[in-house]
Structure formats: C-alpha cells, structure tokens
Length: 59
Image 1 (cartoon, rainbow, N blue to C red):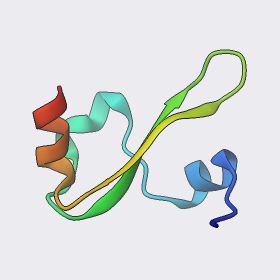
Image 2: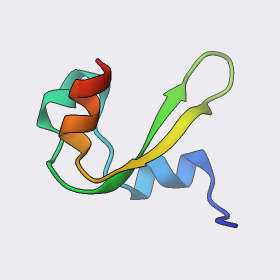
Image 3: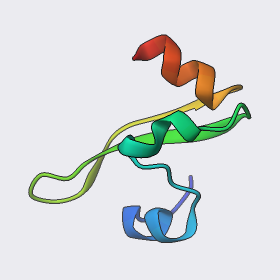
C-alpha cells in the first residue's frame, strides 16, 4: 500500500492543471482527478502508457 496524502502529492509531484492539459507529455504515468469542493479529495486515479492520448480519448 502506498501511503501518500493529497497535499504531499500536489506539492511534490508533477501536476498539470486543467487549464494546461494541452501540455501533457506523451509518456507513461499515473494520473488523478481531484475534487475541490469542501475537502480536497481524489475522485479518480489511473495509469496509462501515454498521458496525452489517454486524455484525448476521454475528453
């Protein structure tokens, strides 16, 4: 099990905001969607071989 908090991930990981989604790399990686309503929380976590293609296929 990986023990990581959302705050730690957002401050130490390579994050791309929704506005900058066109700059996603064409590389493998883990990705996550964060809901920022009352308390920031993970809405979805996934992995892919190509982050850019994965985004384009879903949006």
